[in-house]
Image (cartoon, one colour):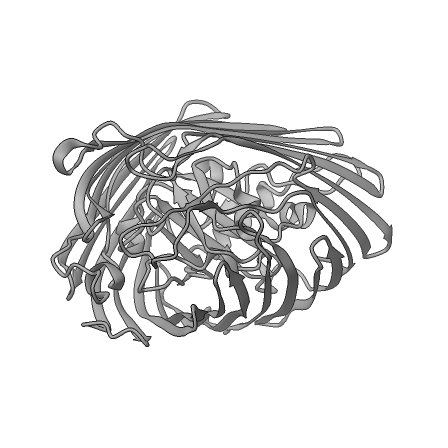
Length: 609
């Protein structure tokens, strides 16, 4: 990603270092973020609603999937076709599964054919931090950032030398092992890591067989900073494995590679160039036939940051090419997008203003202009209010446009307008945050009996809350979302007033952790409301609640053991249902996608990460 003002960021990090109670592990109550503006700032300074999942939280909870760590967080929801590497769709603030951009170290990764990111294949064990920004971000990140942007960061070795090795095993024949190290010397920093997870899986339909999954992943990055302040970096990430589903199996690859350079042209002007490629490859065997969908997104991006006092101007351009190689004969297998963008950050003492705009020219669906304005006002030393308005668009996928017998070449992009007001309180031992938002989405892309069409207009409004505090050895975090995602006008009016399909209207989460010297224990409670599997709101999926337990023991210097028990009460729940439609095979039957019941996992780690 593009890190601006490194000296200022370091100063902020020192002034707002993680808080800690005597002898306890540090926690981040006001961490640094870069995804909202491409510039380093603390969460309370941000004019966006943002959630940070740090390495300490990932280590405590030991999630098997990235989405498990985010379940119940503000504005976040997801569905999956079973547990352990099964197809997953993420909904940010009620927007569709193609409307949240996923980045790994600034590199976009997704399937250009379906539009979905490979959420189920991203191993949280190799990530150092995750930032989830909610609200439109098309003016910075282009198409599809309608609901928000999620970015995972891998270790870069600059902060301190790290080394670790870990192994573990648990329910459903699961086992995992991994190792890595990171460090720096002089102006060179590096990081290298690998992880392997394997499970026999669970049945994803009533009476079905267990469906397994394995994922072997690795990362590597190296950067060098020269005496004149110029920087050159290379990075790569790859996840490769196999997953089974009802009626078939898939071999997959999710990969990102990139090179970037940063050059201080003058004292107040920094120019950055980034060349990247994101790949999503799937080879599926189903019903005796084999299908291959390999997509690549290649990007060249140049941005220039100009500092003027406490103000900051970013001007840049981007070229992006999507390519498809498939056993399916698409009418088009490549498209280019050219863009120019600008952002201006203004500091007026207790007030901040962010202005941004972007022009995209896409050879498949034309030209689009997006923009946003945000303002923040500090009320006193602890309280702040923020206001924002932004536009965004979602591009039709290759499947939407060109899939034989299904695609519609006349379909247009979705457009959205979002307004938000937020309030935050930031204190030495805690914080709270409340955000109210309303989003209108025009030309919703929906699959009808004849294929995808622009048929609906939707209104999504809601409120998000989050709070956290540290009292002695106790660390308490809570969050919740109330949302009303409704169709406001539809083809023929049949679905007017209906809730958008597969979106839960409410969710809540409570995390409580306590340390006892070398021991620690914690509990997470998550509640998710009901949802409708269909746009007609006839097919309802019930609400559910989960209770997860965890315990840790640091039994020697740099050695620790952790036990997690997820879904303690063995809740039987489903977030998605398979239903038969016009494009289903003749022998299709409806069924609920079952998730794993009670699951335990024990791991042992050596290292200082």
